[in-house]
Image (cartoon, helix red, strand yellow):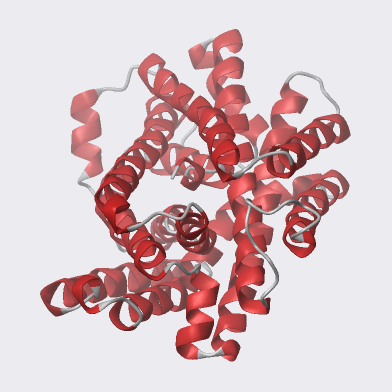
Length: 389
C-alpha cells in the first residue's frame, strides 16, 4: 500500500494544494474506505482462490478478456514507471547528480532487489524504502497550516469548475491504480497466504489505506499552507518544481532532504511494485513461471519482463526527461480505466470465490454502488477536464 503513494500521487497532491488550497483535502479522506474496499477484494480473491488477478480472469472469463485486462495493466505500468523513475532522477538533479547516473543506480538497485531475494526479502526491502515517505509528515508539520482555514476550505467544493473536476479525477486515479489491483492479488497468492491469514491481511490493507492517504494529505496540506498563499494556480510538474517552490518556506536543507527521501522512497517502492505487477500479470495469462520463489534461471520470462520494464523505463526517462510533466495525465488515464478494472474485480468477487466469502447481498450492492459512483466521478472529471463533456 506504500507504493500507492507514488511520485505521480505526490505531485498530484502538491498540484491539488497549490491550485485549490485545502479544497481537495476531503477527497483524500473519502478515498480511504474506497481504497480499502477495492484492495480488500484483491486480498480475498488471492487468499481463497490462490490465483493471481490475470490468471483468475483467464479461468473465469476466458483468454481474450484476460489479455484485455493485461493490456490495460501494461499501459498503466508504463505510465507509472516513467513517473517513478523521473522522480528519482529529479532528486538526483537537486543534488547535482547527472540524470544518467541516478537512473543507473536506481535501475541496478531495482534489479538486485528482485534477482537476489525471495518474496519475503523483496517485501522487506520495499517496505523499508517506502517508509521514507513518512518524511512528508514532517513537511506538513513544518508548513504550519492554519487549522480553521483548512476546515473551512475543505468543505467548499467547486463542483462546477472543470479544472477542479480534472484534479478530482487525477486524485482518484492516483489512489486506485490498475497495477495495485494486479499486484496485491498476485502478491497474496505468491506469499501463499491461507484463510487463517485473512483477518490479519485485511488489517494490513486497512492500515495501509489510511497511511497512504495521510501521506497524500500531508503533501497537499504543505502545498496549500505555503504555495497556495503566495503562488496560487502555479503549475508543479516536476520534483524540482515542488522542491524549489517549498524550500523557501521550509528551509533549503530541510526541504531538499525530506523531499528527496520521500520521493526516492515513493518512486523506488512503486517501481518495484508496478514492474512486478506486469511480470506477474503476463505470467498468469501466458502460463510462464511467475514467482519470486523461483530462481531466475527457472523463471526466465518472469525476470526478463521485470528487467525490461526497469531498464526500458530508465532509458526512456534518460532520453526524454520531460515525460514527468505528464504525471497528472497518467493519473487521469488510470481514472478513465477504472470501469474495466473495477468491473473485472467485482465480477470475480461475485463469481469466482467460494460461497462463504463470495461478494453477495447488501455488501455486493454497496460495493457496486460505491465503485460505480467512483468510476463515474473519475471518468466525468477526466473527460470534463479534457473538454470532451
